[in-house]
Image (cartoon, rainbow, N blue to C red; front, side):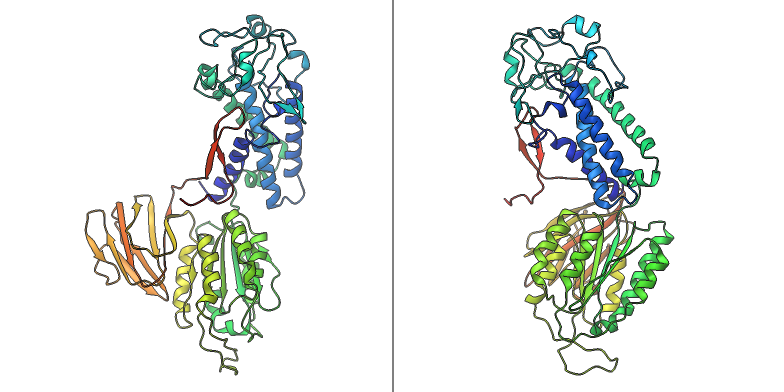
Length: 551
């Protein structure tokens, strides 16, 4: 699946799951079809669906609109799916979804006793006449409220409880519960019907998306909402000062090669983005899906002025990050230090949140000279290693690369940039700014089409192949890898046919090193960090959005 589809699915699934733990929704029965609040819950569904349709039928649907629509969808689907696990729809014998879920009458809701006390199990604890007469009921749960007004189980009315270990109403008449949320009796008294509830809720979810597509009546918009359309972009942030003159042609050639290769393979991104910067100016953002238009903008970059060395690097990057879609790749080119390095933490946070990789190419120029060279360019003052550390940090924290070629190495290094923009990219291993002393392992299988390794400050590199053979990669003694060195980057590519299995790599260096292994594969996976969550009726794992603590 594509990154854009994975991102869309992740937004919906995460919001769906968090409905059970978010403060606003976790205890409100209207979001769960609890406490027999069927009409109020149905009104929530209608309101959410109408809001979703309005977002997707706007004249110009933005990236934030799509994101908001997916999050709204997650909450809506949670409520919709809870109808089948919290009500007695399944106990009535239904195997299909309720067709009028968005428009049913209060007359269908039971206003009489609905449950009996459970015995050794809760099977059959819903009074027979309720299901025979097709009256709807659902369970009450302790600590529920609506707009801070407590919703309590009626005393002496013999209503059903939600039930489960964390529901204290399970001890009140009628004792027990009827929820089918899971397959464990400890948490779900009607656990034996969980599978049937899942099947019907799945059908209801499919019907919802089918009907929504018809309501939106725009397959391009619906495709982007679902992540079927390519929504990731490629951004280029380029220093346009005079000293970049010798390198701009190489940047243009490589950008054109990337575009042409993507077009040839039918893999064009959703948008191409260009942000020029210098000092004191940065921007504007040039955005287009039209290849000819974008090439024209790149061609029109005319390096000029400069000489006072620091430039608005992070301001240009922030401008690109604010406009580009999540899961996108950004390449930024400069030969200067940053005048606005204080923005580095903020830029890193946005890149991490939106899962955008930032690749930084910083040309190492000769010493500062107060005269123009014979090309009319103004060389800049040499930067210290410390002045470049914030470039390394923004690149490594976002999963990108920090490349520091000399002026003579710049053109040959541009070939690497093309490799980094390939689609279906995966990263089996990434270690940033480490003293890498112990061997690291990574897996190679038949789905991994190609592979590149990259380091900084390398001394010796040893590879242990799956057969157990140990090779000196730097010396080029291995028969399984082709190697080359470009600037501060040591690159190895697996020869064909690949040797599959568990590989080991060990590095010795005088200082900090960086290792990144990337490849192309049709297999990828989604992940989130979470913590145990015992708040609310459904214990489990709650997704955390901040970086987890080390250790």
